[in-house]
Amino acid sequence: MNHLVAPSLLAADFGKLNDEIDMINRSEADWLHLDMMDGVFVPNLSFGFPVLEAVSKRVQKPMDAHLMMVHPEMYLERLAGLGIYHVTVHYETCPHLHRTVQQIKELGMKAGVTLNPHNPVHLLEEILPEVDMVLIMSVNPGYGGQHFIPQTYEKIRKLRSIIEKAGLQTLIEVDGGVDLENKNDLLKAGVDVLVTGVTVFHSPNPLETIRKLKT
Image (cartoon, rainbow, N blue to C red; front, side, top):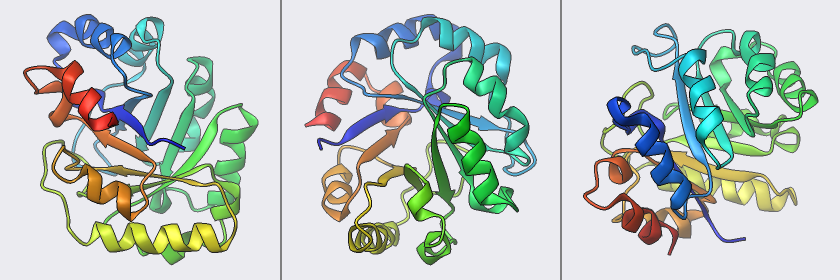
């Protein structure tokens, strides 16, 4: 399959949110990535359900929700009610990860698991057949605009090897420091979905930047 591009709303100008969403609708972006932070699991707050509800009414792209929060299972039904396409939860936040993944899928959404930079990929070997996607964090979660961690390339290659040896169709998504300079190396390593915030929303021409990320 061709790779996907998912601009991260966290980097948008919330003072003109409707304009930013309209730009995404006109663009070649495949998904809209939504970083939901609780200020507990990560040292930052992003946006909650009032903003998410407004976004869901306007956006025409599938919504990809990245839950950086403790007890993510508390919010799954509300996310499904807003038409979220894909939900990823962090490995550390789910003591009963298999149950949480099943809850996501039973609600009609695609399920993913996120690995932080310090998490080795072998942690997911037992759950991998159950998930639709693995999100690899290439920065420490909580803030946009951080520098890409180079060790991520080898981590992606290891995960791609595990997926292929198991005969799975699991997607690999990468988030953090993704830009036009490293996107080709990420794709060669085995990435399916590029998440990028600052590169798109702080660009003088976001539509052209998204087009270049897609090529």
